[in-house]
Amino acid sequence: MNYHIKHVFFDLDHTLWDFDKNSRLTFQKIFNLNKLEVNLDDFLEIYEPINLKYWKLYREEKVSKSALRYGRLKEAFDGVGVAVDDSLINNLSEAYIDQLSTFNNLFDGTFEILDYLSSKYQLHIITNGFEEAQEKKLATSNIKHYFKTVTNSEMVGVKKPNPKIFNFALDIAKAKSSESIMIGDSLEADIEGAHKIGMDTIHFDYKDSDINHNFKRITALKMLNNYL
Image 1 (cartoon, rainbow, N blue to C red):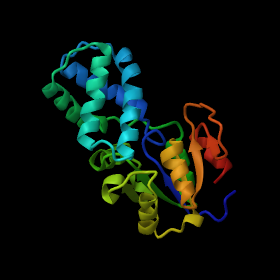
Image 2 (cartoon, rainbow, N blue to C red):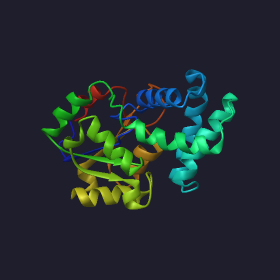
Image 3 (cartoon, rainbow, N blue to C red):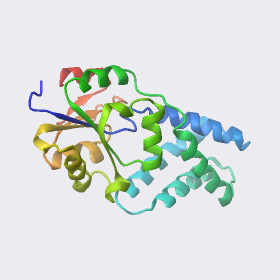
């Protein structure tokens, strides 16, 4: 048990909020609304690695938010061989963000683990997601009340793993790095980023990829009981 820990920081997407499930439902909805005949499984198989690529570029300040939103859809539609003009791509990119937060699937055990942890620690969020979308996700999934502070990259002007976002989050939480732990799915953004400024970490490997590293690792949220 980490008796020195007073503050628990979570990533949101892919950690508490089931991004993959909610994203799939969102694409299904906006494709139907726009009468796009696209095989959803084929599209997602191509889109998901493209999306990860663009988020890495976004973290590294190599693409803008608008370029991310447009580019990931453009490349995915090209990849499945479906011709979509730029105006529709732009409309779809806006619709995707608008509709994404209307779905509220969380990982199994989210409420139970937040109930458990909130009785012992102060809980916080650090996210690279877009501010308007993340606030809606927290509200519609009914977990916002668990968190004392929510830090997003647009507030700070940098993204995880930049140490500035972690230090900003610690400052507004009135927390010390030595008393804090970061839980997230991204080794690069969440775990290595937090580790570099002296925070403890737990990698949420929800895909059970069993990547070889020396950080604490869980594959289900209920496993946090083993560490906290």
